[in-house]
Length: 152
Image (cartoon, rainbow, N blue to C red):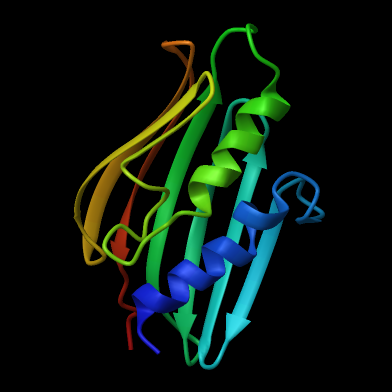
């Protein structure tokens, strides 16, 4: 199994499917989602709700190999956070091998529009996703990451 294939499975099996409430709440107040398959392990741990910050980490055979950090926020009160996050989960379920960081480049459904722009490859990347409601920005998330090496 390749890293891209594993990331897609892990992302779909964690936040994209369970969202708020599907995670384990840890002693330090963070929330955590874990997915394991074959020799890979994925962990998504985040703090806060609005705004929030977190990281996704992947291990292969107990060696750190990849990570992504993120920070996001909701704007305004014209639409409930629950509706925004429900739409976000739909977008995140459409993660693709050619763009294994977040959701598709664009998704429109009703009054919502999701847009993701990123640069780079799994080795080193950065990006930003946004959600608009009736053309107005209601959510954003910045992310960046890449391959990791551990000191021997």
